[in-house]
Length: 152
Length: 152
Image 1 (tube, one colour):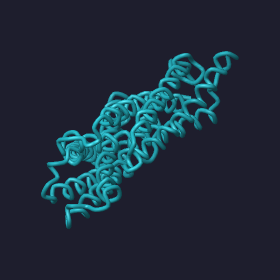
Image 2: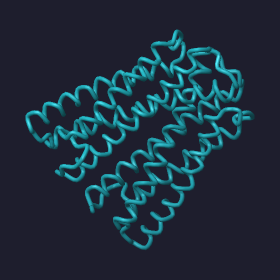
Image 3: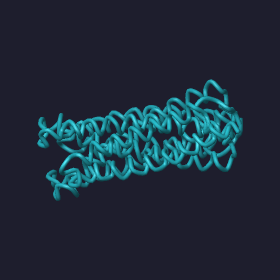
């Protein structure tokens, strides 16, 4: 197995996990600060998906921090396989949730020509943007993990 | 490089490419058979994404068929890198387009409690289902290609 930037137990790996957590938490906080998100299946799904993302990335961030402090190398094939499956599942769910929410946001802002949530409109747009940022960081982690497993 | 099911120039590879083409073409035909799809950005994006999918998969299907007939092995690292990039771009676009359309379909059918397209509702639902089938087949191809590149 190779030891390059972004693999488990490196500083870049830890940074990626923390960014995933932060963006997912920002998405959830934007959505739950609106009054009627629960009327929209896509935004409920976005919260579920980002909740899973926070739990997964936080767990792996702790593991990365532990490996960094103890100077351990986390390149056990069984462990990397687990990371790959988890990363791919969360990345796919995150992209699907972000796209579904973006579809609805574009429908309201562009296709129907107005947004009827008034001041809450910005929060829905912001939540979609944060969800896409979260997906970008988890996609980078997923590609690195799959590469690590295949090259191992 | 390894020679396993689904790699370029194998029968399973050709079958995957043909299925991608068929599902993407079915999605486009379902959407364009409705009268007012162009009012919805998500469905326009779905057509663009599936159009790209048809072009890409048809080209690779022809290449696979040529390799099968001439009994050539298409495991050149440069060629595989090109397949990986193309597959990942089309797979990401296909999932985003399918999810955005699904978000809008769920909004109409579930959240708003009714669909105001009458007989065309079924076609929108069908198009989303076909788009997800198309994404599943391209996702399988993408994983195989990335594995092939990393293991090479």
